[in-house]
Length: 489
Ligand SMILES: *[C@@H]1O[C@H](CO)[C@@H](O)[C@H](O)[C@H]1NC(C)=O
Ligand SMILES: *[C@@H]1O[C@H](CO)[C@@H](O)[C@H](O)[C@H]1NC(C)=O
Ligand SMILES: *[C@@H]1O[C@H](CO)[C@@H](O)[C@H](O)[C@H]1NC(C)=O
Ligand SMILES: *[C@@H]1O[C@H](CO)[C@@H](O)[C@H](O)[C@H]1NC(C)=O
Ligand SMILES: *[C@@H]1O[C@H](CO)[C@@H](O)[C@H](O)[C@H]1NC(C)=O
Ligand SMILES: *[C@@H]1O[C@H](CO)[C@@H](O)[C@H](O)[C@H]1NC(C)=O
Ligand SMILES: *[C@@H]1O[C@H](CO)[C@@H](O)[C@H](O)[C@H]1NC(C)=O
Ligand SMILES: CC(=O)N[C@H]1CO[C@H](CO)[C@@H](O)[C@@H]1O
Image (cartoon, rainbow, N blue to C red; front, top):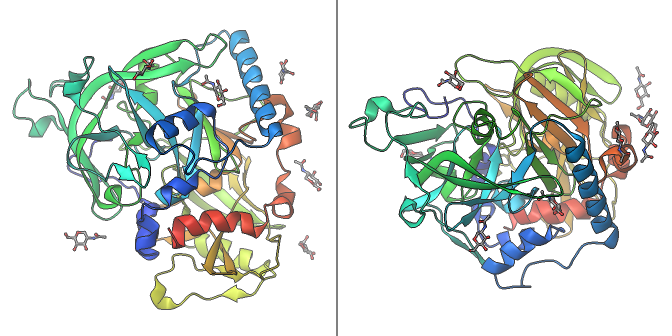
């Protein structure tokens, strides 16, 4: 269950590991403002500027063709939604855009508006957990000021539409520890990252959404979420300082609530753009040209788990059977042996560059790293595809991370970590894909997708996966991002 009563939930949160392994810099707040070196939607820009010193860290507008593509995309979306007879597709009222922030754990964030008057949060989008919580009536929360950026805090007493969730509510998981049926329902969620948790009380309030069609009608959805009074562990340092948006399968998650109220179909999609920008759409059921595999439902705790039958590295196919959780809330992919070693060694055999061995004491998280020459502009590595149950291949568009270890010296690493237990397909393995979490048909769907281009022209704008590396940005492009998030903060 989302709300961990007795047993703790099987979730590994990799951002913690990175923050610890790479030292205080990784959790330093100072880099945050510099994250937005990409283009972003105007609405998000306004939101950020309202909370920051305008112009200090916000970039100039992106290239003209980028906005042209955006406009195309939105016209296509509008056309499609109007034509569709099915339930509405909804997104956050502040926009469908998501952004991956490297200084906040390499997770995708979205702007979420709650309450009356509304307050907005920069929440991490997490398919690996269920409860949505925000910092609220804080006893112990992350700092609200990061450089120039200010975060909001929710308070039930300041929202006229806030209602308490009582212990008698079916969504109250900790009924046993309730003083009485008429008390507010407490919650505690423990994440497997060491000492990382959120606790408080459940509340109900309005989540502002909008229809993804030309009418852009505001939808006020009453949802249940956690008033997070006490956060611990990495929530205080590097990840989700302003709330975690659980997108899991349990009844308490927002997609479950939206569908149970008949506001959307029981499905949603997330697109993970190569440039760190993405989209989220509730009610989206995917398209007929997507690849699919069945979700494996564990009755103890339903999650987005799929079966993998093998991994194809370059032209060699390695058969192996394991299941993995698709978790946008874990930064990097985590594999247990033998999958980890099979993948890593097969990757290693196909790499041209010299292996880089980190100082064993440095606590560096990646084992398979390679030196880049200062003048190198492309990285040639083998392609990686996961073979899913049913035969569909899941292309890994961005399996590496480039890290500047010192000035003018960069390395790149296979961005996969060795797990002792669970296998987790993390955020990095979803890059370049639109992923559909279809909870009604119990399938995971995906296709290579440029989140910002016209749906029907995706065959033009998405790189052919076998040429990914040749087409990958020059190492310097990666370096900026990796450096800011991981090493220099
Ligand atoms: C949120 O509040 C602002 C004023 O603070 C208001 O202009 C805006 O319309 C509100 N948004 C929604 C969706 O109600
Ligand atoms: C977790 O808490 C325990 C006990 O308080 C402490 O010994 C340990 O160092 C903590 N771990 C981390 C990563 O903070
Ligand atoms: C979840 O919701 C469904 C439908 O609303 C209900 O049948 C089911 O019992 C709920 N599950 C739990 C664990 O409450
Ligand atoms: C795999 O690819 C390499 C070059 O990338 C080639 O030399 C080798 O013959 C190929 N092996 C097979 C079995 O196709
Ligand atoms: C996009 O493709 C679908 C079918 O794949 C078609 O029905 C639709 O008309 C196309 N839209 C445009 C704008 O070409
Ligand atoms: C995408 O590919 C299809 C068939 O491969 C083609 O008919 C279509 O024109 C392509 N889309 C665009 C926008 O060119
Ligand atoms: C990708 O490109 C290669 C050659 O560059 C081609 O053989 C292959 O068919 C292409 N795959 C797709 C899915 O277009
Ligand atoms: C419904 C909605 O918010 N659509 C938006 C999706 O994102 C683009 C780009 O930011 C906006 O132009 C759309 O209005």
